[in-house]
Length: 140
Image (cartoon, rainbow, N blue to C red; front, top):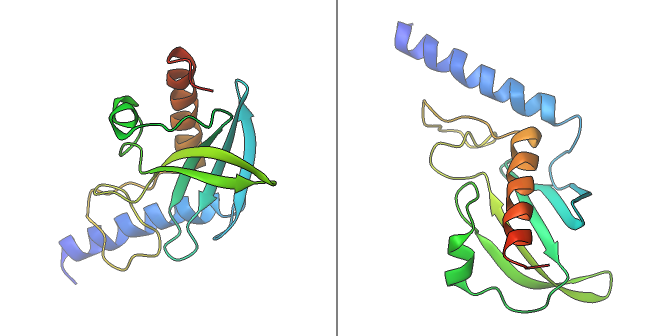
């Protein structure tokens, strides 16, 4: 076996181990709800491919226009911006995913050799940053 193939296999094993370690906290198809500075947040693990997504559930029902969403700096940009029914109430939910070029997607058979797994700690950090940006913009 060539050294390049062995290095790739070793690399993939390391990134998959990070994913497996995260699985003890949140399995495929599960959600974690928590609060960051008075913002309701959610992390969801994609059922099909195993990557994580982060969301902020806003109290304001004002539409967050795409031009405003583009100003928010978060991993891969805002990729989710929709009204959802949460516990019988309409809420605006915005979020991002960790399924971009450069992201290690756990259950995708082919990976970019420099891709890194974005774990729970990473997603929480991004959500904290997003909540701070929303607070500064007066969006609740």
